[in-house]
Image 1 (cartoon, rainbow, N blue to C red):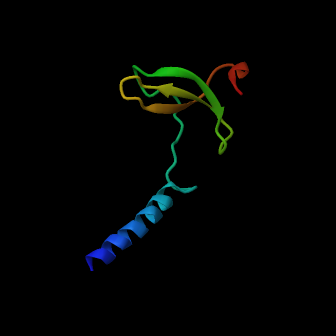
Image 2: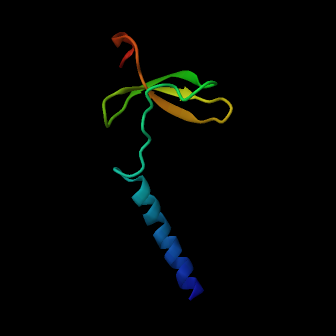
Length: 79
């Protein structure tokens, strides 16, 4: 019985992960402003394939986290 439960967990875990991260599941939503003090804007910019918006990448050197912020400013800065 224990072997069956382990096998069932191994089979179900990828399905659960797939369900959470598939299109329409978990999504990172872009921010309207930088997340807070200490965050540094990188040179990275890209067009979000879903919305077409230009996003800037911000980085927190203390934690290593990245945030995606809608680009603001003049049109020449957009992709």
